Image 1 (cartoon, rainbow over the protein chains, first blue to last red):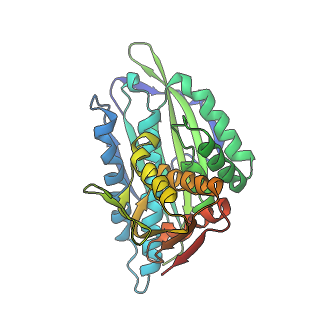
Image 2: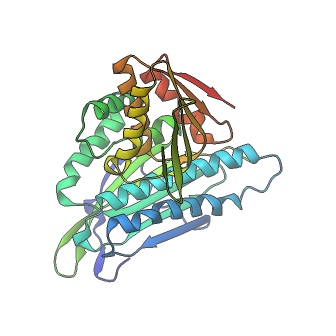
Length: 205
Length: 114
C-alpha cells in the first residue's frame, strides 16, 4: 500500500454479493501492483492485456497432468478474460486525484480461483456503481445481459457497455462480490476504495 | 478494406462477402471501436444476400468488443438483411461461451464452429 495512506477503516466497509476477505496466505498467489501514474490512460491501456495474459500464462504451471489441454485452454482463456475486464474497469473508474495504487491478486485453490482487484473510485461514481451491483445481485443475469445489449444498441452515446460483469456471470459462471471501504490520506482527505472479487470454479486436473 | 495493427486485423473482402477478424481485440471503448463497427455496418449495406463473419482466428475479444458485435447484429436485425453467418473455432474457448448470445439477438443468424 502507498505510504501516504494511513490504513483502512474496516468498520466502514460495505460488502455486496459473494465477498470473502482475503484468505490465509498458505496457498499459491500472485500480486501485480500499478502505482498511481500521470501517464495517460490510453498509453497504460495495453498493460491490462499484458498483465491479464501474464496471470493466465503463469497459472498454466500449476496444471501439470497429461491430457488436460482442453482444461488448460479453458482456464487460460477465462483468467485472461476476467483479469482483463477487471483491470479495464479499475483503470476506467479509478479516482486519479486520489493517487491510490491499483492491485490485482490471483489466488489459486485446488478447485477454485479467486481474483481481487482493488482501486480507488471517483466519489460521483459510487452511487451508480452500487445501484448496478444491486441489479447484478437481484436480477436474472441472463435477461439483464440481453436487455443491456439491446439498450446499448439503441443508445449511440453510451460509452460504457456495462457488459464485463454480465459476461463473467453468464458466460463464465463466476461469482462476484465487492467491498467498499475508505482510507485516510495524510492530508486528511478520505478516499473510497473498492475491491472486486471474482470466484471461478475450475475442474480438477 | 482492412484495419490492421500489431495486435489485431479486421478485413472485409467484398468479393466473398466475408469479414475476417484475427488477433486480440481489447480496445478501450465504443469510440475506439467506431471504425470497426462502421466497416461491419457498411459491409451489411453492400451485401444484400449474405455476409460471413469469420472469427476463427480471433483469439481474444473484450466486453466492449462483444458489445460491438451485438450492436452490429441488432443493426442487421433492424434492416432485415443480409443473412449473417458466423464462423468460430472450437479451439478458442471464449467463442463457444459468448457467440451463442448473438443468436439470441438475431435468431436467423447462423453459427458454426470448426
